[in-house]
Image 1 (cartoon, rainbow, N blue to C red):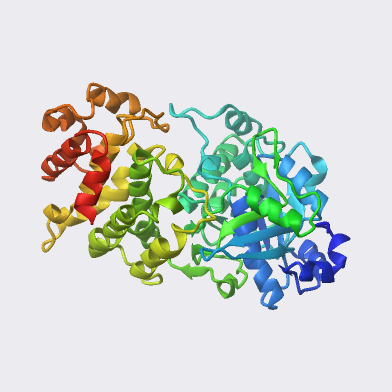
Image 2 (cartoon, rainbow, N blue to C red):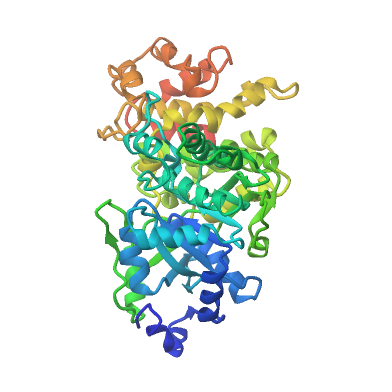
Length: 537
């Protein structure tokens, strides 16, 4: 069995192996898509193939959509050359369910793939042709948050950006420079409207995309490199919109277990590759079953009926509320709590942690008991139902190889949002008291114990990367588990960091409980386990 047009002509073999196949006429869909495209996506990676391409696949199968997606890759061209083209733009989605079952689907909704490379005349000319089509409604993006960044930490343009700013839209090199050049072609074709939809997992993603594109359009117009009115065109939401979105789906890198399963089915040539830019990708993608995509409904040239595929459309305020619900209460705080204690207790998988009664109770308590009273309720998603899914389906999923060591990375940059907003809500509440918070302080104390780089059995380990390690770790360097310490004296300089915790924990009155917890956590081997069980069970 081969994943291409020829191999898929033998549908009986695929169906016998348990694969769901496209039921639409892909040749007809391809023809109308290329002639009158409505959706182009930038970023040909795993999240796109597991989520957006699968939504389009479902809609094509049930007749709600008559056109597929054109995908363009602007960072790692090898994805197109080695994963898209050899397989006629087909891919396989293995949906890994918490009950241990796997659904295998052949995805054919991507009908054309291109490199976003202005030096490739054939590909870039085709992209310009697509962008000047009146039918085009949206360009979506999964290019990671750094894809929208134009400047370094000193506020200086990155070299490729600086060069593009000077040379204009003729032959840009930077990612956003290339995208803006395509928008310029659309501007010159009659200021045609469309939506630019970031679907990356970062806060206020539409604004990040807007700021990046308009930085180019403004500079080019001011320098006489683009016609007058281009900046106004890219800034006018009635012409070019930048909706906010919230996306949530775990899509790990291609799994060896899934690869072997597909090979056992008889599939050939489906092994993952690692590109020269270190992208780990395969003709198949594996992902969890749960997925959420909420989009601000701001589409000046109309949009496909993606709500029929489970995508939610709403206003900007609601998108923001959904994001805060996820990040500040219902998912990310639970993940951080598990990552901290998972590292201390020797776990390598989050799913295994959920089999540990104490760790499960910690996650549930942070979500249900301490988070829900102040949760931002977006209305379109029920916060309690969301947590139910997190603790009962998503986190325990044995197929999700998520490591506490990965999640604990950069924790100092996450605590203020993941827990600080809850603390501030309690401080501002006329009916709630911050003194009732017992588990969030336990996470803070656990994180400080983690920073000692010694696990609960006294074994040293290497800390995951974090920009604040050099600032905080020296305060903890002299502590030896089992020796008497003055926690209040040791932790005082740390607990005052508003930028880390989102509040001055002394002013919030939380210093005492954190110091008490920390004293217990460092009282000797096994103290982490004893302390955790003492306060959560």
